[in-house]
Length: 242
Image (cartoon, rainbow, N blue to C red; front, side, top):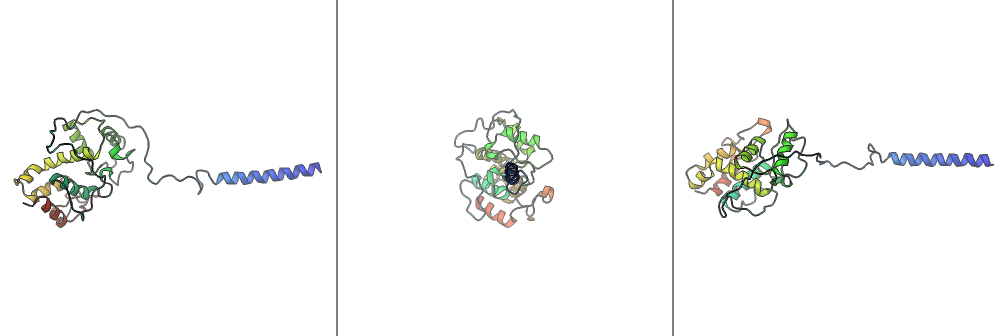
């Protein structure tokens, strides 16, 4: 009887052990019940630091580059009225063409390795380090989709410290530099025609169309205009009614 009882105990123990082992196997990494990885997981890792100096030294209060209030992180739809000053409405229009979904936190969809954080929460140094660490992919970033050569050129010319957050205000400032390069002052004063200014903007931002309705960079790296020429002209006419 003792032998029979021992055999029964071993059999039951073995069965329970098998059940427990099966239950554990259902929770392994390959199991359908394993904790799921996020579809939007951002790669982690240390980002190197860059050096530089300040972008906005000497900007006077009340001027074109005076400090701005924090704006929502998303761009408005074209159907909503553009609001604010002339330069604010221009930024809204360009943001609609370039990054209407993610706004200031936009990253070019073709980037296989995304930044390790939201762009608006990263510093300029961290963004430059991400660019350096991920060669061979698109790196257009932010509401105005700054590409590396443009970003690096503006940083070098204006002297932005690497510790500066890539905030909405900083992105607006960088966009303002490009607007001035395109001839904003001349267009505002009537010394440059609206259509000429529109073309110059389209030569900077691929989402804006030229008069033939296509992006100036149509077909290059997948670029295409994200609005029609009629839409673009209508909105620009409201911003520059003269």
